[in-house]
Length: 223
Image (cartoon, one colour):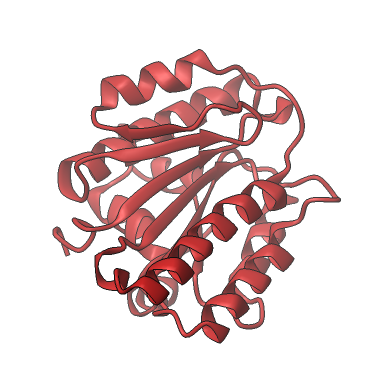
């Protein structure tokens, strides 16, 4: 599986809302550092990074030092518009797929692996579930390959309200593109507090590959 994502675009979407301030922001930094380093070492030459509230989009980031510089430039502030942010990302990608489908460049368009780092509870007026459902239906209706987009939610912290929110996303109708894991749970299972390579693979591949996701969900604890 080491070369599975060599031709994929990996996008980190980071929750920089006010609720992430303090210990959660430091935990998000640790999670991003570990996952991005693994992705850049084994799966992709570059990654993209954006935040919920900070308006800058960082494309083609090639090293973990640059990843950490980008993260440290941002301070948590604002709300948690999870659904709105995902809607923009998903619509942009599906629009692009629709275009290359018509113009003959479909085979060269890289699938998108979206990795969302969040404490898990969105604004009441910006839920991600209906956005994902609409995107999944649009992909199906437009006859796109089922693995062209994957979404992995990585829970930061242990807010009890986050677990049902995130777990509900993998059971939505017309949806086979979502996985979710708890960073704190898996990091807490190792002596050094770091994610194992197996968990890092699960985070990176889980949103994209339904068969792998089904295996992990059957054999490993999610939360």
